[in-house]
Length: 156
Length: 396
Ligand SMILES: Cc1cc2nc3c(=O)[nH]c(=O)nc-3n(C[C@H](O)[C@H](O)[C@H](O)COP(=O)(O)O)c2cc1C
Ligand code: SF4
Ligand code: FES
Image 1 (spheres, each protein chain N blue to C red):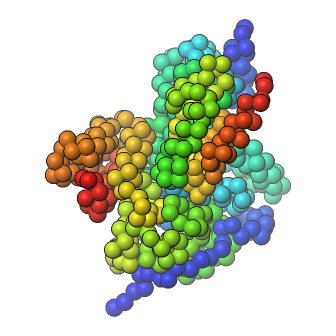
Image 2: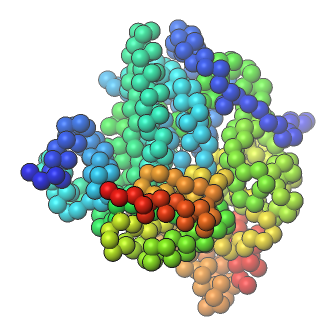
């Protein structure tokens, strides 16, 4: 059994093998591995005894359940109206510049992926972004450089 | 014959006022007769704060009247409407109020299981909220009331805030809205009678259990009783969350929160309406009622725009949002959102004559009539109110 299979087994024990456990299990895999591979979706289907197409059908509906390869840190910059008005494009340009990638891409070392997302619920402190589950608000190019700098220094 | 339909703006403080008395309120309320609690909610005239404005007491009554071996109470914390951020603050500051109201609801309708559907963007709240739930369940046990709550995390889909899409999402499916009827009050999560209430609605229910229906009902105006949290953002010197008595005019609102140069306010988020400056004074903020003149239903999102903003960019941003968040299940919405967006781009680039906007307005009307759920139906709100009021900005 490889680590993904073990993870899925653990999640199935924790959440149960009902259909209602599907989303929590998918989320559990994404939390560890950042995205869903074909392999992990098939394993989940076996574990819950449902068609793999159902697992893919559900997963592909949700924007946080990525089915493409992602970096270990997924950056999601809010692009909805208030963040847009308050300088989201400057934030984006700063990140692109620092990581040397454009929107939608992953750094060659597999550390960062840069995406946009819709309103994060922090409009009064716009512009906002998430790095994995962490939220950062009132962003300026300087603050973005500081925040990403901390992630650069993180080794795992 | 005159009825007060608008009030000057009045700030109030109920929701975030925390006297840490939830245990007392919970034990006290659970001793009351179920029917009497329903009557109390009905006479308070509390309406849902999630956007649709359905009377909360009636919702609880209908679910209580449904026969079933199992029922559920769900707190809708999907808060995805652009410009809304109050539910997050309620759940971080006063989660016990929300849990208390959920437990009372469970008692009234005959449920023993509750869920909080929390949007994935608010995952950072999960830990503290879980602790609050544990403490709450402990207390319920102590007083011999059987009620369990769990958090169900969303995964980044605005449409899952629509109550029937929310059920499907919890059932492990794509979050696609169902046909209504049947309504959640008889056929909800797992096909069982279910109350879905917005976070803020539940917090107001706590206020009502604490102070009584009259105190709540005495606030606000006819058809729009009580208070409401407003999420204020955009071109304002004081962005944030404010609890206000319902029924003030937009003019009063802008005087309080504007930057002196407010040209328009979007009320109710991307699915709400844009109100231009010339109509601020005739627009009251509340739920629609026969006597209230122009009154806007609202989830409490208030986005202010000053004269430096292009309304074309605003509309473009909203349409892009809808195009992405449409579940794609029905054609009017899936294709309509794409066409509206492509349409205003073509007019802006001069590839289509400005009269093409008329065609697009017709299209948005068709969507309003034929789309399956509130998402597709409400695209016309912002589309028509922006295009009609800022026609020249769409063209040049
Ligand atoms: C597209 C769409 C998104 C919605 N999103 C939310 C939401 O995020 N939170 C919410 O409470 N209600 C949302 N609603 C309204 C719910 O369907 C439902 O009416 C509400 O949760 C009922 O609670 P209330 O009566 O307390 O307002 C949404 C509706 C639609 C059509
Ligand atoms: S109106 Fe839009 S969001 Fe609603 S069911 Fe149809 S396609 Fe889905
Ligand atoms: S618009 Fe970016 S957080 Fe709301």
